[in-house]
Image (cartoon, rainbow, N blue to C red; front, side):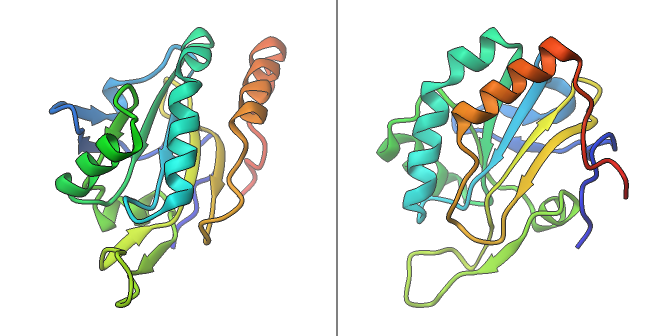
Length: 173
């Protein structure tokens, strides 16, 4: 598994979205950052709470020049169910992330348990802030579904970073 290093270029990728459009990283950059939130999928109740929280924060993020998108490896039907069942119709919701792209991004992958509603293969949670030039600024990559970065703290960090021209940390490979 490769690991994304701050200040390195994030691979460009494209995923379809539940609104019928597409999200391509190189074409959807925020003025300051693109927030990529990778979630486990429809089967994950913790993801439901996290994506609802993200939708509530979209305006706060937009005021800071941050474009946000949530992405999973789910199939279209499951992603559409997530959008509908979770009430996240304002959030850009991408689906169909390929295993190859998930590995390129350094996401942890899990096999679905046969006694659950988990898909056969899915990525574990991750959150990236990517600069408009597609370099990685911040990464939180998790191997388990619990303990997500609080979005309020992330927004405070974005405020600090923008006000103080704070450099990416963890950049030494």
